[in-house]
Length: 199
Image 1 (tube, one colour):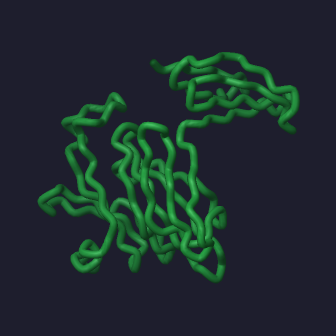
Image 2 (cartoon, rainbow, N blue to C red; image 1 turned 180 degrees about the vertical axis):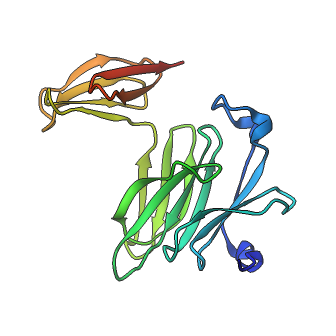
């Protein structure tokens, strides 16, 4: 594996502060870590702040990860994939601190060539610059969505902790809960919907 020494000098990097981790995990198992991307190698690295225990936690090939931010309150890292500018296949990705549970925040092509990004932890929003798209973009991080396909309804949460339902085409919107704090909707295997409230 090529040394990332030169990359870290110009890379965006973030440190996870275990003192701010409120995910319920054992903080002794999630010490402060340095996270940084290797755009040329398509990788994301993690290391102790003194540079020891260097690990590759994400390896995606030629997707060109460029910007990175750590969400200590949720236990996630977010990074931008510039992708191929000709293909217009840039994306924003998320993973746990160890590189597991990777998911798209924006699908490939949902942003052109995303570069640096910033987290607004208070309002749970992610901002990034789209170079070829010549714009600044934003995504909500706390809005949840669950579908009841059999019943023809969708269920949506917002940042205030309210829960709404509507027909799949967006009509017939109803408020089910108002201002209940952080709420997560979970679709069970039985297709029944479960609302889980968090103080």
